[in-house]
Length: 215
Image (cartoon, rainbow, N blue to C red):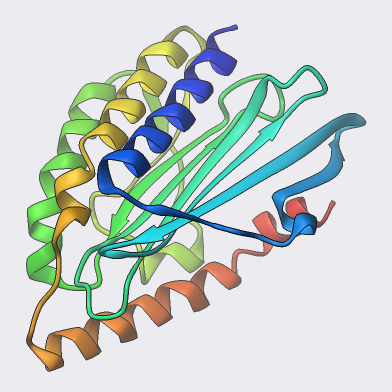
């Protein structure tokens, strides 16, 4: 199954990134490590792991799987540590209905200069998926906090493997972005914290995702 294989590859690449960055796993409450639910009558479970260290306050890896353990969705959220100017990593890959209905990938800026160093990664992802995706309209909450290079799209069935391989390649290249993004400038640090807070507030307004997770 191209979707399950591709999603699994993205999740595994994220764990390889964890190892390269030397992040430590954060112990989550049992109720958050595995959450049972259903999608259109199909029993599913969301498995959640979180890591932290260096430039990352948290890197969360969440995977929704079917009863056979095949991944149906993968989400990666990386939030910068206090004092870091690194962008906020957001990867959301959703195939709950059997097809890859959503590919959302971004490095949301907390500092414009630091983000410019990350922009080429997003551009390469756009180049690698050109002609293989269908652009989706940005939700209102994203307009004020996503980067101008954010990828938000659906995928033609015949291009699923290629697109997910491109996303895995994007994740594999993130090491330098989070290896060292500190600044001694307190003004830039404060501005980065403020933009990070705005990103979190905007995400909380994503009612569609919130309602889906509640179900």
